[in-house]
Amino acid sequence: MDSDLTQSQLLRLRSSALYNEDLAPVPEAGRKWRVGSFAALWISMSACLPTYMLASSLIGGGMNWWQAVLTIFLGNLIVLVPMILNAHAGTKYGIPFPVYCRAAFGTRGANVPAVLRALVACGWFGIQTWIGGDAIYKILGVFFPSMLGGNPLPVLEITAVQFLCFFFFWSINMWVIHRGIDTIRVLLNIKAPLLVALGLLLLYWAWKQAGGFGPILSQPSAFDPGQPQAGKFWGYFFPALTGMIGFWATLSLNIPDFSRYAKSQCDQVLGQALGLPTTMALYSFIGVTVTSATAIIFGQTLWNPVDVLTRFQSPGVLITALVSLCIATLATNIAANVVSPANDFANIAPRKISFRMGGCITGAIGVLMMPWKLVADPSGYIFTWLIAYGALLGPIGGILIADYFVCRRAKLNLMALYEEEGEYRYTGGISLVAMGALMAGVLPSLPGFLVQVRALDGKSVPPWLNDLYHYAWFIGFVVAFVVYVAGRKLAPKA
Image (cartoon, rainbow, N blue to C red; front, top):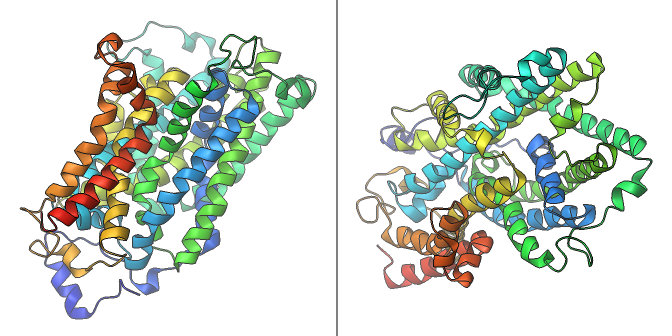
């Protein structure tokens, strides 16, 4: 394996300020993940409440069931490509994401993509924690209705009881992080079956209450002729597709954090191809079907499964649902949103920041970002949160793939990745070409983002420039890719 180093090389690495045990290359003896391991990882991470909410938010936006499922499936097929490509370096050299970034961005410059990716993970950590706390709040509210009252707190805009439930679930996450990542292995093993079973039970309930799948799946699209948004499908589809890609844009970058444990390239490719698109399609189908059924059963679209569960009155059902949702959300949160940012923050100061400390930083920032505002409504969830960070991560993906496959032909100097004065130092540890490509990739989408968050008046931005934001991941990826390759040819040492 290319990650196996001699004893003298290991001694040299351990003396470097860019090295710690969490960032070290994984030797051949530590490569134990086969096809099943990667498939199980993606099944476990994809079968989660945000996947359900992602699918049903498309229904809320006007799509019918097959349009929503197809959009999600296509988005995951697209993001699977950079996922597999970026995983190659992790598998070949046993290195995590922040170390992989050093080749393109420089030994110090790697902190820029690592921190940007980590901040997005902090947001996702907060969202998952809010979902878990909200499940506790709403289901307990069925037993104690008085809990659901109260005025929103200043600034936070949620009630004190809501915040206490959120903080309680956040504390459980922090406890797991403190104990170490091995604590969640049991949770991950039981999490996927729990949430898949809960989803299938909801699917059965929807089928029974709505009088079969016919009424559910026959709900028309709001974009059909004669419907409220007739003729506007493509204007909604492409931004939604960009949002679907953004859903796993974080993992498409930091997948080396997991693929470094792969036995072979074949294992990571097949495992991811089998696990990601299929599970997302299945769980999104459950989400859109149940959401469509709520419009028939309750006369209103409920896109949050917790809101659906609170309509049940059986204490046994509610308690089982509460425990299942909390375990499932906890396991997904730690696996998907703590492992990578903990490594990313550790990369800032490897000698001072450990994995546990990096996890605590993730948790603290996740609270400060007030995640309940990110998922307050379907349009904000897709068009502000998912597309906005896709505009940042798309260019990073383009740069990494251009550097590794086009400029370096999949060959890295493993020792130099950990050397402060090695070939990846560039200009004071920062690659000017990579930074320029990153800015070039982000700029086209910036005006549209500022309009989206109402920092700019939409009338002050040309419509064509505003529309670029809806294709942020694609445009950022392509622009950064081209600019980086051109920059490397013009200034290979910059």
